[in-house]
Figure 1 (cartoon, rainbow, N blue to C red):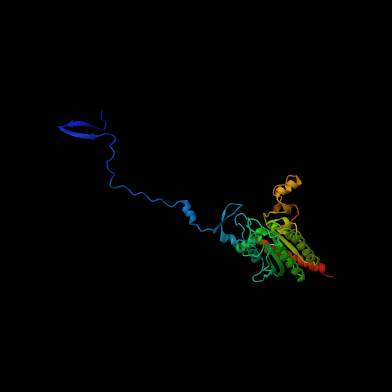
Figure 2: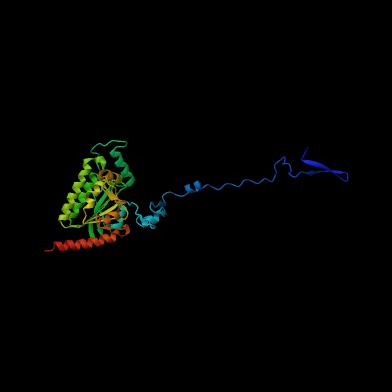
Length: 317
């Protein structure tokens, strides 16, 4: 039996009544709505944001505006995490304007061992010189910090991990000797992964050379302040970085000689948590003070005043 319609006679007229569900239209309506255009996806919006404007803090995970970070000397304004900072930026934050006279600016390393690999040592040096604008991993010179003329050496981790090769050792030695000759206090700011493997024994010789120069500087009763930043390890920490009259460090810096796994395998002992951090080393007497980066200039001025007065008093007949 058909269920789509039924006939009903009323006053001799035949009418057709529709069923409960009307049949589908045979043709599309003329007034169909156009589809609404889709908005751009979040992925396309992300591409519209220029790169290099924000930095994610690894400690608090907040996004920090790059300009705000630069104005704060690369210190997170929310949690105080100290980002790595370039050598020239650090020098500008410490010395008085136009007072820094750089030494040995054109000294470059030589591939004495003819080191080969995926890329030769010479190719690596050229690549890092191009990307960083530095000749090697340290900048040295004479500058004025407040009222004091000082010998200042600042390492840069962005150049081959701040590793110490022949040039780094030679530039620091010449700086120390110049400070000794001119009777100037000395400040060296370290950040390094250690001796440079591409130069073999020649890099290890820099440990003894820099320490010998510092011994003559100390014999002249001149102050030497060592500042440790993240990270300061291996051959640098085992030589000139750890023999200052005062040893300062930035908060949260990693400081040590070897990695935790090597130390554990060598000593066969359980290591305390955070044993290579600034805070742990302050508690156990290896460093003298933790100094935030924004306070470094003021604190160095205070320490230089104290040490210089002490040196004068000791030298007086």
